[in-house]
Length: 274
Image (tube, rainbow, N blue to C red):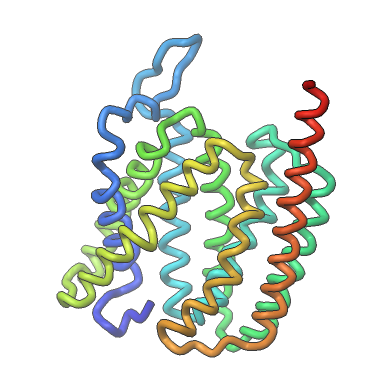
């Protein structure tokens, strides 16, 4: 993200959420009632509080992440955002009643070692950027757990509600800062970001969270910090230090161990049911 190329960070967050929500809106048609949930088998009235908190955390996460990207390298911002996994592992037993397996905790530790190695090679940044990126990680963790709590809701409805709700919350701030006017080039890029880089991935992420525990989803998505430095180098020429490749190899090893452990668990359960 480069706010000097025609878009303020708040405007980027606003337009990205707006275009993502509008793009996915047809998928949520007729499914809004799922956001209300049910009680004693009967639909509730209105939107449940979890869905509202989901929008709040989504907005805080996206705003912090975009701002962090304007103050530090993309690799730093995305790596620190994935400190969300710590919050998910720590809070899931209380918020979601989902307790991580001991084997998964070891895998988490190995993956975090990989992230620490990557961060060590991307330390050329300022304290403000790091702090905002860390805040993004906290809000990403809370968002993931809220989406998991909404797993009985339609994934498209949750994703559209988050994005359009975020756009509504960010609009007064973006308007007050006078940052809504964009060049045609910036507008086209933001439309693409909203659809390809934001809306579709978060829809798939919400689909996944309806099927797997939050802490497992957070482990799988650790693949992103490995890929982001590569993509940013290809797109804008950000140099990829050797520590990124070393740390990436550690994270990929942790993911392979996680997948193998999950497969062994499934096989054991299948054998016990025979």
